[in-house]
Image 1 (cartoon, rainbow, N blue to C red):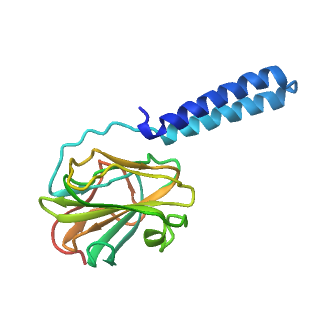
Image 2 (image 1 turned 180 degrees about the horizontal axis):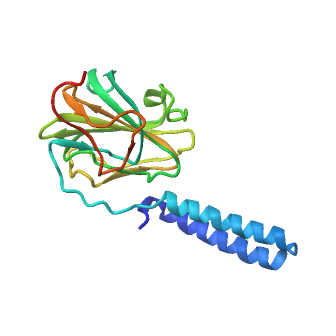
Image 3 (image 1 turned 90 degrees about the vertical axis):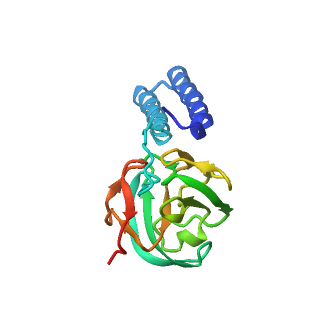
Length: 221
């Protein structure tokens, strides 16, 4: 199954690829050039299809756990000052997504959306320390029954040029459901209460709506 945000791109790419394959068959006499162009067109279509894939991941909501909002690799685990909304120290966990990862953003916890804001910005590489505050991004806060308010931030990367955010203030959301999409390489930051017990380690690969990012517990050392 493919994400709805990719429908237009997939259809457009499909028709362009078909046109290239047919055109090459009729107008390019050199066999190696014709085949090479046709294979390249098909590879581009396959890459577009894999990028917009949206695997179904049934979730039984669990109020005592924060699940990974996206697929990718954990690149940051640290205590930081969150300056946009909380204006106090929080525990940050950041997940980097390469172009080959599933790019669906899913709600990390169930609760009520209390804040949702889009910020235009730069397109620094997603692992750049300043990308969290200077790149194009959206900030969403969910009020949860057990953790209180948690914040996640979708961040555009050097390749990403569009962030899709479905969260609306006042909306009730369910852990694991579709929260948005980031096109072509990106990062998501989670800002959690300091008393959260982080369950992942640096460079660990995580799966959206499957991997536990944090639990209720004692403050991390």
